[in-house]
Image 1: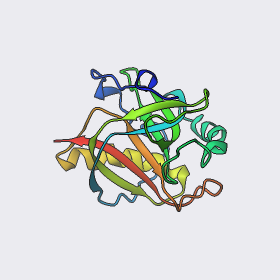
Image 2: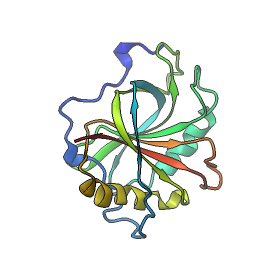
Image 3: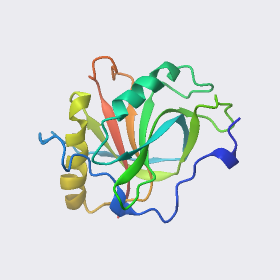
Length: 185
């Protein structure tokens, strides 16, 4: 059973310098970045599998999703149908943890191979990526390289989310993916 003692809490002194700016040395196509919507969301929990990556070397993420996919829709207490890719635990060396997961309520009993991550309450800028999933790095790069510097906002300390909403098809890589960035002014 998931209790407050085994929920991953994000470090308060986490460095923003280590946050991923996807695509620094990756794909170069320009993203067609739509203006974001803004949402306030209360804290929630994600259950899933986690692996550590360097922001420049994220090739293992698709394989991580392939391993997690059999759990989708079968995680005890799963809330809704959205799956999440969560980037968190950034460091100054350019590393981060990435969790493939789904939302669950507090107190959910999980299989031992799944971890639990607490997503704190934030104000979020939510961007919609409509291109094929292989082009998502360009959207991340546009958010941090173009929109963020011109927006008057700064990234807040906390996880960054990819929300694979109802029309996303993991077999084809097509459909909408929402990118949730915690923000502050």
